[in-house]
Image (tube, rainbow, N blue to C red; front, side):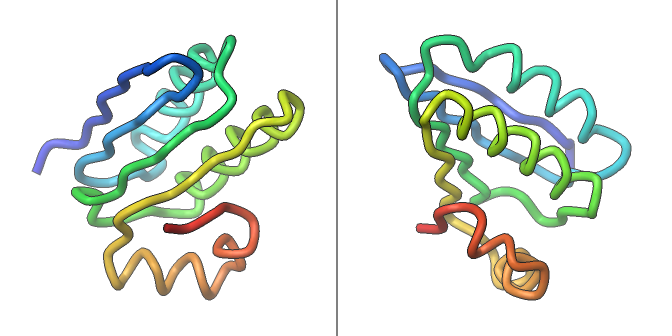
Length: 101
């Protein structure tokens, strides 16, 4: 499966569709790209419907995005987590850091 993310901006909401893995091979690029897209954004929605794996590097990228959105008084929402990724979020406390729907 190809690792990728597709962004779409709707007014002040940035929706990011994830596919494959978010790990040390692509987390830095993902973080840079999303952080560069946050001007005039109040909500980031991360759609994990096709994300099959997230590593600590991926979690760090999410934390960087959350910190930037906190500075902008915005929010980060994570949707469509698989069972495995839900378990990672629960074990690491990310379910308390990010809004999970």
